[in-house]
Amino acid sequence: MALVELGLIQATRPTGETGPNSQRSVSARAIGLSLGLSYETCRRKVLDLEAAGRCQRVSASRLRMSPDYLDSPAYLADCDDKWRNLRGYLVELRETGLDLDMFSSISPQNAVTAPSRSMAINALIDDYLLRMQEARIADEEEAFNSLVNSAVSNMNGDLLRFDRDLNWKYAGVDVPPPDSARRPVTIAEVARRVKVSEDIIRGRVNMYVQRGWIRRVRGGYLHVMDKQLTPEAHQSRNTMNLRFFQLVQALRQLGVDPRTVTAD
Image 1: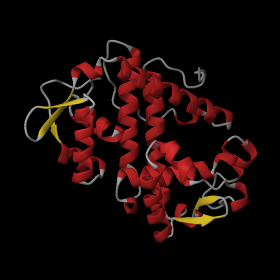
Image 2: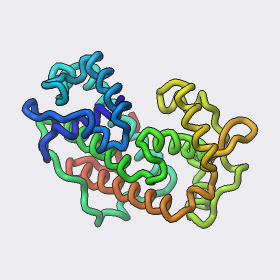
Image 3: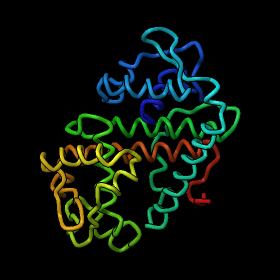
């Protein structure tokens, strides 16, 4: 539902602005196509958004965000959470020894104009999240599948994430970490990370097991490293890295120094 909400906000937000225009609307089908979601999935999530008061129907097939929701404490708190999570990620990257200045020549995301820096940052984060979904591997088919697949892979790497020596040792795609350096994850853990039911996660994980992307091991599931070393996966990671450093450059344009932000 969060992805559909982001797609709805982006589709009705004029370029360079931070919020949707009340005169703009979009169809559920168009949002589904942009996110790689089936029409039925998108339609059901739109109904959930309507029931929650987050979007409004302007015709039988056209939708827009609810202005009241965009001014609500819940939405503003969500914006704060996204910025806090991004700051925490920047701190983690610094702790691994990554020099965020080494990519200073990369062109930033599109600039935005906003009454406040926090609104501008939120707009940049929203665009970044959607552009990351666009960089998914084609074989993942849907944005949500990509989210589940990435969650398993990332959680497998928890043992490596905060060990600088191991992190850099296995940073190269030609030197994958052994199973002993990765942590199996359970269906319940992935469900908590992605914030959906265990039944839904189990269905997606079993689908990837059948495709040979994920395998069952003692204690849970591991992403198959061979699938992370394909040219398609390598290209997807390169694109995701580019999108991230474009976001970093856009933050610098707003006066945020990624080298000094804290997670607090």
